[in-house]
Length: 417
Length: 176
Image 1 (cartoon, chains in turn cyan, red):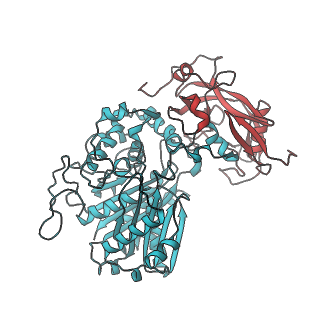
Image 2: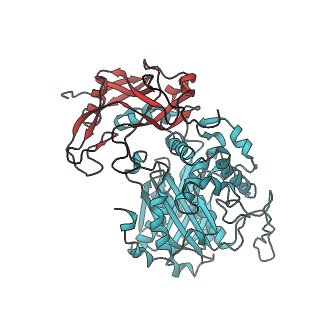
Image 3: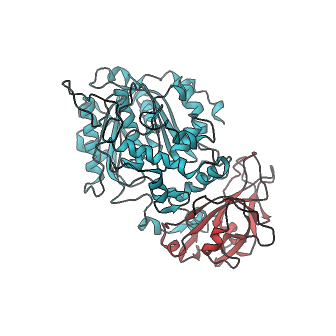
């Protein structure tokens, strides 16, 4: 079944009916010295405080991990929450947006009223996604022989042939793609909580050591210890809470290429899951890429940001190299991407922090270094020079593009409430 | 295929195992150990597939014949790994993970589809490629399979430059 065959109108009647009402996180650290359970409770407590919710108000919980986290039952119990619904699912990037859709579904089904979603990970101290530790030397059996058996294991190694083929087919250059890191580093320099706040140049990226072609060290995301949470509820409840709601306009969840996991068999190899997700996303949203003010295109690698922006239609196929290097995605540009600095600079959360950032953008209350006025709110200067503002002026529509692999991805469109 | 015990192979010092009930992978690696590349072919639509699976991904049917395939193709894409993750590969950097599109079934069932096999670049006698061989291989290179024995009833499908044909000038990542 192609995306065109799906009757997406069933989702349309939910556009505008749900919202993200609270967001929270821990600090981004390397060597956090806290358990995933302790970090998750902190992140959710912060999100509840942000929303103005008490433990009695939250009755649903969702989380995702790759077996490297804690469970909702521990976290809910610690916070005094008695869930009427919970589920801990397997997944990394592209989970957040899909779980927002699931949260809407379970509320709509009458199973619960308000759902907290979290990701907690000691991604630097305990389980490193691209690490060389115990995981890298684990036994290799059956289907794994075709991948890990040939030294094709880490996400970077696994996605690299897709990236390389894009350079071959479209003439995309290393300099163009490095601009994703440059842009995100500029954004991070204005984000007090980012792990890497230093601005870098194209030359810094290209002269950093090669990991696996075409990925240099600075084409790859950071690894950090942290937890992040968001809270989803109905728009009616959202109106009574203390924050301006980030209204959910459309969700596409874990949309796959043909043969998903074996994405390299179906062509074109340079086409990623967003190509299929976009038909669901924009149709349900009643909006298109041209309506979006700020994007959160997943940056596990510089290339993932570019490929998704292309396949969701922000530029023509093959022109992603130009799109990410012509100023569009930088603060002050037409449509900034990952204004927090994203996973390349701020910290690694498997996508959820990029949703948090866009919620704050839509509220107009990004936590940059602008002065706080008499009303207790940031007085944004829109001066994006180093150490300055990172609020996008008049941000009304955001799009998060979550990457799992080239073979599957998720997306979320939100509008200012 | 009467074996009931797990098959074990040694590739670059890594232990690779096949369970006896993995009736998709056992014959695949068994044929490789006999120096043959055979893929499952659905007799109904004539389409082959890789990696081995229990059903034809283009029809959902289980019927299949292990069909002998000419083990040659063209590099479709690759990564050249400089920072090895797995201990077994750390002595062999930079090593190549090649995506080789077989000549057979190219452009089928869709225009941009094909059978793309992954494997390491090796010398004709199956040793991991030295840097000068790595530097001569890229997108467009013509490859032939090297069946590297790794254990009883198991061989790894590796690739080497096909020296029997004129090699085109391959596309390589621009920064060396």
